[in-house]
Length: 355
Image 1: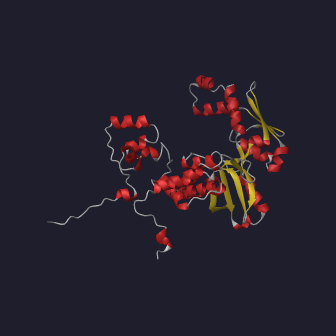
Image 2: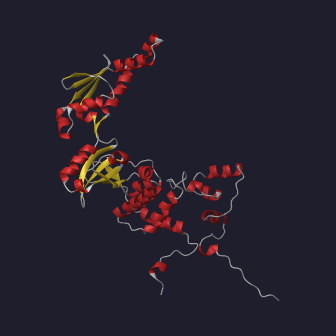
Image 3: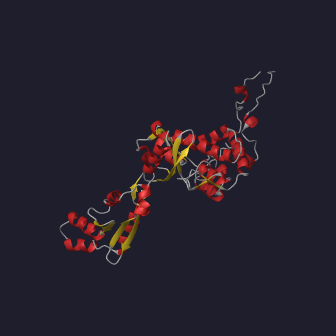
């Protein structure tokens, strides 16, 4: 009697790639194109086919990135503590707490503190003033309005740089309305408090209280003393690879793919998903499955040509006198030979008796 371990082993020369492709491709045709509303975070996170395509194409960042921040036990037990941390982590922009207007005639920028919007978010006028210090050393303050004169800042810089050729420098330092408009939009997007790249943080109750937010800045979130560094997760696979390395990215591909399939109620054996994630990460960086990744790097000319950009591959092969060794499945089907998988890989040699 064979043990269970022996029965689930893959036989020699099995076409595991084809089986994995079939196992994921077939349920993939039944997937919906819908997007899914994540609890609390006001972003529609893609699931189903769009998310699966995002994963296998190794996109730089997902359409809607999400980060799950777990807290140390002292903070994760009470909701108020968790909400306090969420407030500190979630980035608040100048445009959320103030009205920023530019006066293009006088080349000035006015930032008016809005107490009604700022107070619920815990932003004081002093915090706004501190955020403005990166744009101006001594801005003019009138009540709750900060006025910045960019031209003054610019001439100050140029004077310290060179004292010779003064007239030339003054000509260069003339501040234009276009530059004022550009600086205004920069000020609007400046952060008053929180982690850059993490926004709309909400507290969710699972086994404990944790924070889910839009964005994906892992290193920025880890700087907060309440965050548990061992349990932080984002659906941005590239960010995980950058911070935690290729093994973490590989596990993330398995997890994300499985989540997508489970959400649709489709069952695919975990080993097929693991095979695909191994294929995407075995070389030490994440490769997509497609003409710019694994399929475009096949050894055989015919194998590459059968997928996409047929003429390009054939012309290049002719130009550089490439040799086709008929290693893969596709190439052998094209030339009408037995495919080198399964029993097609085994050659029988008959021993004849000597006369």
